[in-house]
Structure formats: C-alpha cells, structure tokens
Image 1 (cartoon, rainbow, N blue to C red):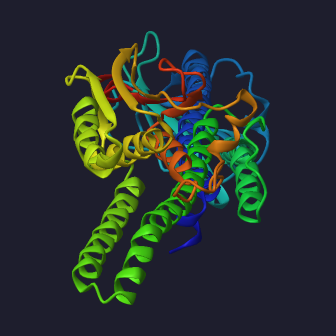
Image 2: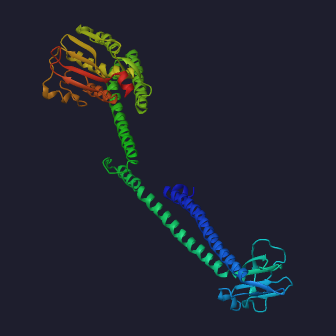
Image 3: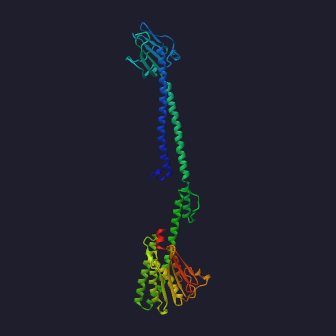
Length: 448
C-alpha cells in the first residue's frame, strides 16, 4: 500500500493540492486571457485612431496621394521604428512613411468597404498588427487604399510578462494554501497522536486517562476505548469468578466421589461424576455467554425458579422439617440465564436453610426498575459489624457448619454481572438474616 493511502495527512494534502492547482490554473488562464484581450483591444483602438487620423490628413492630386498635414505620431519618421503607414493611390502610386525606408508592407489588393485587421510580417521580421481600408477623398472620385501597422513585439512581451507574474503569484498562493491545509491537518490530528500516546500508556500497564482535553470529534473514540478496556477487564474478572464458582461447585462433589470410591460405592461415584460434568459444561457455556454480553439470555420468572429451589431444599433438609415458603407474582421476570438465577437464589436459600431455626421465607416483589427477591430466616442473625465480612470470598463465620464460604460471594458476583447487587440486613423480617437480591426487571433492561 502506498504512503498516500496510509497517511491521512498525505491524502488530504495531495487532494487539496490537486484541487488548488486545477482551480488556480483555471483562474490564471482566465486572468491572463482577460489581460491579453484588454491589451489587444487597446492596441487595435490605437491602430484605428491612427488610421482615422491618416484618412483625415490624406489627399490626392492627379492620382498621387499626399498628406495635407502631418500626423501626430513621431515614430512614422524614425527608420524601422515599428510604426508604419502606406497609402496606395488609384494609379498604383504609393506614399509610405519614412520609417519604412525603401521597403513596403504586404498590403491587400482586394476591396475593403470596411476595416480589415490582421497580423503581418514587417521589416526585419517584426510582428506587426495592421489595419487597412479603402476610402474616397473629398471632392474626388478616386479610391485610395491606406494601411497602418504597429509593432506587437512590446505588447507581446508585456503580455508574456503579465503571464509570468500571474503564474508566479498563483503558484505562491497555491503553495501557501497547500501548506496551510497541511499545517491545519497536522494540527487537527494532534488529538489522534495524543490518543495514541494514551493507548500506548494503557498497553504498558497504565490507567486510561479519560479526562485529557481532546477535540470533540475524538472524545467519542476515547469513550469507546475506555468502554472496551472496562469490558475487557470485566471479562477477565468474570473469568476469575467462573473459575472460583466452578471450583466451589466441584469441591463438594469431589469430596463425595472420594468417599464413594473409598467405600466402593460406584453408583454414587458415577452419579456425582455426571453431575460434575454437567457443572463443567454449564460454567463453560456461561463463560461464553457472558463474553457475548448475554446475547443468549431470556426472560426468567424469579418466583418460579425460587419455587423449584424450595422443593429441592425441602427434600435436602427433610430431617429438619423446615418450612420454606415462596410468595410473589410469577409474572415478575428478569432477563438472564435460568441456571445463573438458580445459582444466585440457591446459594442464598441454602445459606438461610443452614442457619434458620425452622422457617425460610422467599418473597418476590417489584420496585421501580428492580425485581427484588428477599430470602429471610429466623436464625440468630449477624451483628452489624460482621455483615460486611460474610461477603468476602471464602470467609466462614462458623466452621462447624458445612460449606466453603463462597455462596454469598458467588451470588454477589453473578448479580453484578447482570447489573444488580446483593444486600444483607440483620435482623430481617423474621428476626434472623435477610438477603435481598436486586436484579433489573426484564422490561427495564430491554429499554436500557
């Protein structure tokens, strides 16, 4: 690829230079032609004036022309001065200016009822402009042919000088215009060079400087780069979260498999292996869909998922005979993956079942653009100073209770991926701990 295609400044400079050159060339041609025509018109007017003066001063006697009075053009008397006249009488007699010496001008021998102007060659190859006509002197019945010629060498030289001056002037103007455009383009592209420096600094590990003063045309590009960087960082963070979530989900199953292998319980080991495989596949799919910004998401009923989890937890904690209730409108939906919603609610509801005395309540309601699922229990609750600790990944407040301490962190991470959050409060509605899962409603998310 040539340099003019790679360089924006070079392309703009070349295109501007081409248009300026063509435009100035046309203006130069028009200006020089206008000046030349004006000079020729003035020259012809002078010729016609000299011809009229000679006609008025010419008389004939016995077929011979003569001047009644001298004509006010001193160059007619200077040899080879470039100003000549030639008068031809009816009998072929000639009267010529002294400037011709012994030479004659190539006059036309045809009848000229009016003026005839043409270019001819004069003495010593001079470029002459000649005007001639026939006329009849007063009180005579004789036709006299008269010719006046002036040298064009000076006017031609003047016209050439005007063309050169105009050409030089327009060339300087063109170079100045192209230079101004190149300077303007270079000045205007400084914002892109600064943006390049920002990106290089970012690639080297620095932070994105979004407050740098840039032209308004470049600011949206910087905003898009900042969004891309944030998206990439969020993708990396999601990948880390997926790895942690997968490890948390597989830990319990691996323990069960180890115990089943030790006790030669192949059925349980096979069942847990299949479950582990499903977990791996689920997390791989979720990682891909998270990278695709949720393009495969669908509208999911929060109350319906909570009701399914409640039935499973009743069987899991059957020996404790827990009362697990779900209330709320099944029409309240969030946009996402059903497995992710089940994992968020499942972690919150399972934690509540571990710490409750006898009752776990799940209520789903709508508050503006949010769908809120509140999971509360009647357990001992937590002091205010310890509510923040339980959100940290891997923190367990009681080692006697089974678990890895990742449930709340996983629920919070997944909620953040969907633009939501998890809030904890104690005491809750039932006296224990209340976990509130905030997720954008499906309609609000679509509108955003």
